[in-house]
Image 1 (tube, rainbow, N blue to C red):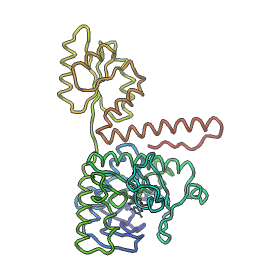
Image 2: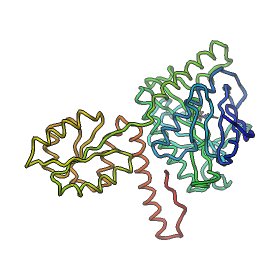
Image 3: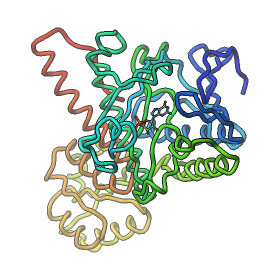
Image 4: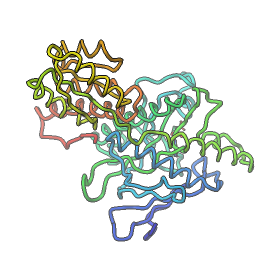
Length: 396
Ligand code: 5GP
């Protein structure tokens, strides 16, 4: 890819301007691996390509769920360890989410058992400062130093938690426990959403702990390298194999899982009743199709329509316009059936999305985001009643 001036250089990547596009950067992942804040450093041929693939697929999944990230494109082709990202002013914090106790948490708090589930998830902030070994920093201190506002901290912790849950969901489908995760945020410097926070930097196999089958001894992440006193070529080859394995698994994380909502109107007069629900499910990016049937005039036709739809779509949910049709449909198919008269449209859309979310990480992420935005709207409405309006804090 055509690259302009070097903008920044980290321990494992180099950032360049994109010629002719001042708001876009090219991130090139290098073959370096480091530990102890750069005190130990090695090169693993091919790691840059593997890391770019991993980060690009993670970002694509998060974007698809509706989370704001700096990722635009690239990074997934075999010959290409370059990603295009929106240019950001980085916030000098490492935001760590923990779902299982490990690492520096158990060193700091010996009372916490290693491997214990942490719920609600713990979000911690570390100041990016290699010379001082990235010290833990309290939220009050972050605000006091002008690093981020309280609103931004609220948004970062919410987005970080949702990111953890989405990636934990995706890993769980491979019988693997996502233990913890580190993210970084930046403020978009130009264009749409200027000044708003997005997940930036990279999320790759250096940024998390992953334990297959929940077993620490099977770990696949960078901790294997951190634990080495000194890395022999054989050690580095083992680390490379782990990174390759992780990229392979992350490569199977969904980029799209189309599901279909089959709307069944009990007679032509019921079609309009379904319209607000069709609009509500659009918020989750679900596709829909509508059929007009009649439970009392043409029961055989209902059966036929349901059999046709069941045979056509692997991932399907029905919405029937009333209780009689819902009961009849339900009796004829193993596919979930919802009765439109039992719910408000938004409620029904959420219930449908949840029913798909168990096995669909994208739908799971969208449900989490819609719920977080609903909570944020309440907090905003509450604060607006008694004070000047705050900045909008929608998550995506
Ligand atoms: P801990 O604080 O337990 O050492 O790390 C918590 C999580 O953040 C782990 O998943 C670890 O991989 C990640 N992490 C901590 N510091 C860094 C860092 O400097 N770079 C990267 N890429 N990840 C980090």
